[in-house]
Image 1 (cartoon, rainbow, N blue to C red):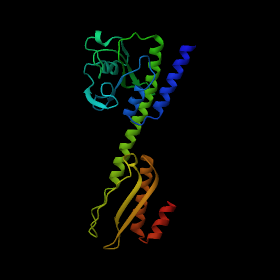
Image 2 (tube, one colour; image 1 turned 90 degrees about the vertical axis):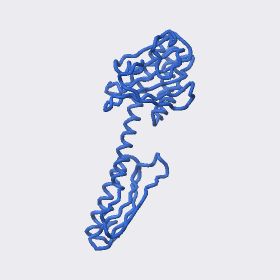
Image 3 (cartoon, rainbow, N blue to C red; image 1 turned 60 degrees about the horizontal axis):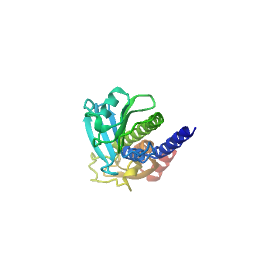
Image 4 (cartoon, helix red, strand yellow; image 1 turned 180 degrees about the vertical axis):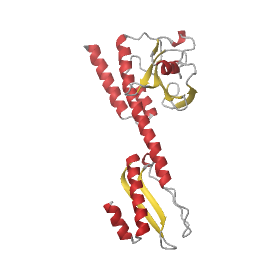
Amino acid sequence: EEIQARHDAALADVTAALASAVSIHSTLTALLAAPIGSPGVVAVAMGLLDLATQQVTVDYVGAPEGESRDTEVVGQNATAPILEVIRSGRPIIIDDLGASDNRSPRGASGTGAAAVLPLREDSGTVIGAVALLWPTPRTFKRDEIDLIGDVTRVTGTTVARVRDAEREHRIAADFQDHLLDLDHGSAAVVVSAIYQPASEAMRVGGDWYLVSPLNDVGRVAVCVGDVVGHGLQAAIAMGRLRAAAAVTALTASYPPFVLSAVERY
């Protein structure tokens, strides 16, 4: 019961830390600080597979670089335990890195111990692997291996969530950039604009500007607006309202009428 209580408490701490992770780096940092085994983990490496390129991006935090982030991209068929685990989907436990021939995970200095486990999303698909490194050789107890396995399962869910959010951010950014590309086809006026968000975290959202030619020769409509919120949903709503404003202005260029029509829309 005491072992199970320690297991549950450690897993709860890691789960709470990973719940606030918003990037791969913050996920690695949370794992580095997690109470997994004794002595503690001194470095964490994570390899994530890109199915399109069949390459693995390996991120690393910990000794000797401290909290700094180190990243490299390697081919899926390269030789390293973290890549073997991604290919096989089976964990590798190394009690003594110094006694293991050419099996040091990324970031290991040749001494200590390591546990390398596959990362899976909720469907069970392997999306990468994580390597935890200890400073000295050690024999892993059954309860420690069970805890590491549970932590890895939570980490896989966290990584899938982070990657989905990053993918949505890229889509939204591309979508917004496309919409905010001004129409340069009008001969009525020369215009330029720039979108400068308060911070990179707020880069994608519902802000828009629009300069649209009107049916009246020599006149254009200028519109600036904002949809509350950030991310893809706000950008989609922004695109719809921006289009409604442009279309309405083409048929009825009286500004109060355009605003009233967009409000009804």
